[in-house]
Length: 343
Ligand SMILES: NC(=O)C1=CN([C@@H]2O[C@H](COP(=O)(O)OP(=O)(O)OC[C@H]3O[C@@H](n4cnc5c(N)ncnc54)[C@H](OP(=O)(O)O)[C@@H]3O)[C@@H](O)[C@H]2O)C=CC1
Ligand SMILES: CC(=O)N[C@@H](CCC(=O)OP(=O)(O)O)C(=O)O
Image (cartoon, rainbow, N blue to C red; front, side, top):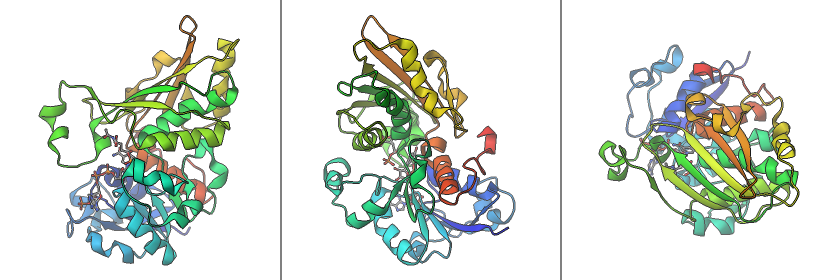
């Protein structure tokens, strides 16, 4: 059976490392090139517990990534780096799965405000397919460019979209608080993320201006046909990996709690999604897997529904989702290669 050759750019990052492990075990994908300046010249086997041919691969300088000889390139790089590389790789005939936010927003006008740069390839935004299969897999088969969703955006959009589509909650006044483990910030050597700064601490950040806000609104609006402005407050918590999101929505007049719970019936048969009572949704049950656990509770006294979801930011929030999306692009079983560590 033909194995699709793959390259990982940013292979030394937290997302790139996780991806390398999945690619090395995937039955139809073969990693052939790994790019990182930090580890240039070292073997992958020296950095990761890999078997087989992948262990012998030597990390290549990032400057050579535009010339990658592979059928698919995964970009696990900052958005500005992905934005520069993707057009070059696409022009050379590679498919691109980008893990950054560079191609997630359809409207280029949103980039300066939310990402801090002017988009240099707006024509590719029209072509890019958003890689969240559970809310839009029909767009994926055959895609050349996949924009892999953000970690918070994955957890939050999956929780919100069916509820808004049900019509049982209002589109206005949606408020989300989410907590992320520290790997969500990447391997950046910044004092703010060092052990002594995050241990025994808990804080909110980027209130009302997190870059995933327009992405969540775009995804929910596409699926549900409506979405008001979402208030989003992310928090950094002193765990290594995982995201828990709590989403508060106002109930529509006359909404029945039992009917609201049925909104998640749209996920019946999804291999990675499990609907649970909201207070049974926990990061430890999804950590190191591609799973999403979610549930909704009704607080009738306050007139709100609270939806809770949990993912692993590095798997369903990044590397696992990227593999799942590529499986969908290729028309394969979406779960192929994702059983690593119980995924
Ligand atoms: N961490 C997470 O939970 C998630 C991350 N993402 C996205 O995935 C991408 C990778 O994230 P993550 O793995 O966390 O990041 P890291 O900081 O851990 O790694 C970044 C990687 O990109 C490479 N790189 C290339 N150019 C640059 C540059 N100019 N500045 C910094 N690094 C560069 C680094 O190479 P080298 O080490 O050789 O310098 C490294 O391999 C980002 O776009 C991120 O937003 C998306 C969802 C979740
Ligand atoms: C804890 C933490 O800092 N998390 C990151 C999420 C990274 C991510 O998924 O974001 P992009 O791919 O959109 O950059 C953040 O809040 O920016």
